[in-house]
Length: 281
Image: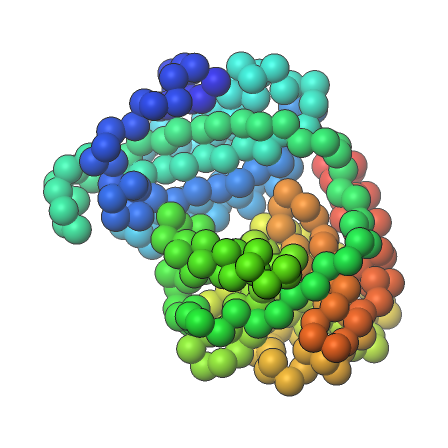
């Protein structure tokens, strides 16, 4: 069951062929984890969506309150019989049909879908996870790159490249040749007691899990968080690297070229993250 503007339907072919999200990428999306009817990090998702809509100059309906978004998400979860399970929910907001590049209609619509997930909380996957740099195309270090829009060609092409080269993931570079993020999440590096992540100004996604981990790291007495540009030359000098997103949590990287990594800090942070999730439930 999908939720299109509040109406639940089994028909997955409800969008027009001239939908602006399909034709021009004139759309935003949020991917949310819902555990037994609890929307994780709801406030952060909501404010990121609202800020992103403002940046894309979308008209925000008066009805788009946090409570409304939560109700629509939970209605969709319930319709898919996932209220007592863990679900991956995707909200897509797009401008209404009309116009070419210039919209003729400033109104927006939304569609919400939900699929099941196996684990209620975040687990650490320590299986082999090799990455490399994707250097065919580069991320622009600007505000648009930090948004979750439908303009994800570099992530799609990079994912194909990773599959063709038997890689679990790739790391993206910006036009200044700094390492920005992974194809599907933010990047953290550990060297001794310093934990480093690229700054938003480098063009990385303004990730929800990135924010959660930054908050956790900032209260750890033994570690220092640094938000600075990452050179590709640093990657083989650090002790640990991991990728974060709201569905997986923390994914340790096991190998980059000839370098292998430990997972000690990833384990520590995952433990703290799950405690935070439980306390918020």
